[in-house]
Image (cartoon, rainbow, N blue to C red; front, side):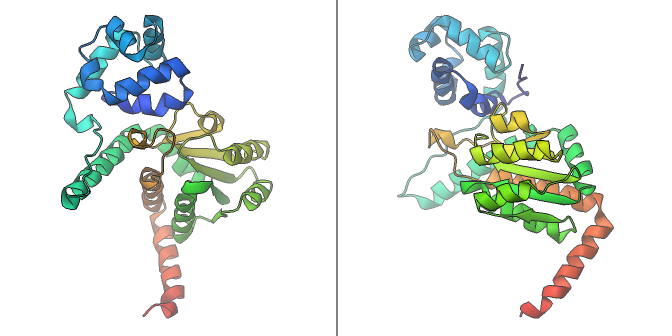
Length: 285
């Protein structure tokens, strides 16, 4: 059963949302939008507001890693009483752009803080050890996540970690068939439901390569396939119910790996960066 991290209940609900049944999604949607009101409701009142049965409320609580509705309310109250850990939808007014910019940046900073709290040190350590000893790192992504994959491959190559990336599905699949047991695949997908990435991870497993996912959703098909799981947090469903367009949290996870790998292999990393900068110096003014 998924465990709810302290002061991360709402982000856990967001992360598990795609795996919930339709009736449970109604509860999740109401909780995300009306959490301040939910704290004072009985299970009967919440079931009436969501138009679901009381049993569905209890199942929802257990699906997100809690013992029941009482445990849910206690956990939610603790989170609400810690404003730094509570995500609020940013207020955006086109007639006050200065305030809107500040609100959006505050919202994005909160996403990054929550992403940091979801990165497990044990999983990060596995990544550092495996990537440092790998022969090749293959970054894969689809659609909106492709820029994050390009960024990752560029940065890893800068510190001497041989990495490749391609933005066409056919080439990504073709490259996957050339993987070896010393290689690593890093798949980036907000939803964790990309058919392309699932196929590549299946191929990678047959080739005995290590798979790492960077995704928003804990129980997505991609995270179930991955050997190592790194979770990012985005809350855009407050704006877009079915889509998430931001890649800032995913790129921040890649930056974290990049900086930790640089520190782990410091001498090699600095030498590699120096060599590349020297080689490119003729192209700079």
